[in-house]
Length: 95
Image 1 (cartoon, rainbow, N blue to C red):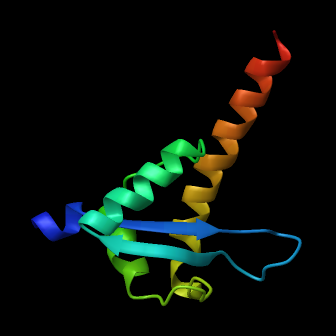
Image 2: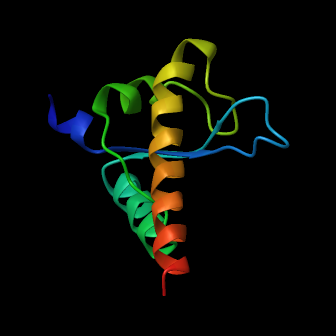
């Protein structure tokens, strides 16, 4: 892995009621990637490290839907996020 590969951040958004597929809503390298990660943390948005997927998604323009060939990999990310949300909801309901 090169240093550049470790410094990429991609932000995705998916509203299954409105979107046909997840969209890239932000992407960046180095300082911009750090800012994207910081904003995500501030808003409680989960972070996931997947260098190969990040590199592939970096080729997608901001605002564009994820290409079909990346659906399976992005589905894993969405499942990760949904599982975290379920765990948090279950934890909050026990209080």
